Image (cartoon, rainbow, N blue to C red; front, side, top):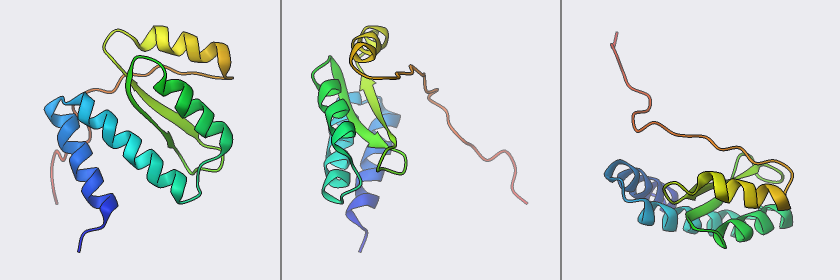
Length: 110
């Protein structure tokens, strides 16, 4: 039987590839809640996720090893700079990055 994490990953990947950012954001929130229940979050990460969710974004969750990692948030189109600036005023560091649609691919197999 596939694990809940596997199913969540597959749904998130499908949503991303289809450009369905609303569903992807909801799945990020579900994953974040699961990680929180697993005990890998911290009060500070929880505050950052909650503050992120108050902004005009699709979703947010902790990322990294937990216990100190960081938060990834998915803002709505053309909102990244504004959301980042608002979060920067409350928290130490904020980075804005873009993710190309195409990721890793196999060019040739041996």
